[in-house]
Image 1 (cartoon, one colour):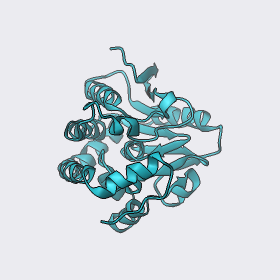
Image 2 (cartoon, helix red, strand yellow):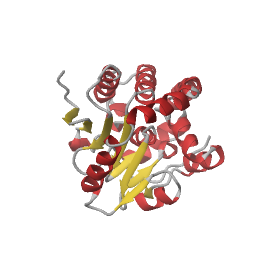
Image 3 (cartoon, one colour):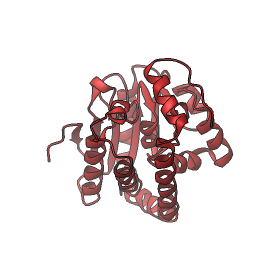
Image 4 (cartoon, one colour):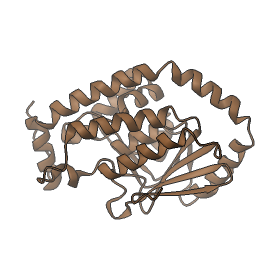
Length: 259
């Protein structure tokens, strides 16, 4: 299958998925979400790969959801439809019978950060910029962000990170246990190559059985979180604070929230 927003490459048992909208810092529009969902769903039946690497083309991993699409007045952005798509994407990726690695350089923000956190392993350059920054436009994390963040750091810390919405460097994210391995700038690919070589030489099937057991106990919870995110995001989209947050973002000013 041909994809417009993804690049797919496979070397041996390592399959690399590259988010490919570099002109938009790989922000995730409806088409990219659809293509990722379809690809990961089909990948459940693949027997040629053991490891899946997720990375971004150009200057960033992903700047998050496509703000321009959200601002469109042509009726192309339907929040209910988008949330339904994100539910399918998160579940397809979380239940993928492969070892998944997010390789982060540049920005991984919002929805992009949710996808990173859904991965089994996270590698990031020291200067990478990671942020669960939905709060800046008065929204809640989506794409399973609440669930994946909580799995990494626990509920109290997850709340703090969501509510602060601050940007962290790769080094800071590593210190907060959000990133498994921090890499010197410019050495991400070399480190990734070494890491994937180690993984493919490991007893991968045994590792995947453990993943299946552990994730199997959590899938229903993830579904509940995704349903909660969909309801909350739909409500927040029409709230005055969100409209103020978007206007402030577009006009590069500090928002004045009132709710």
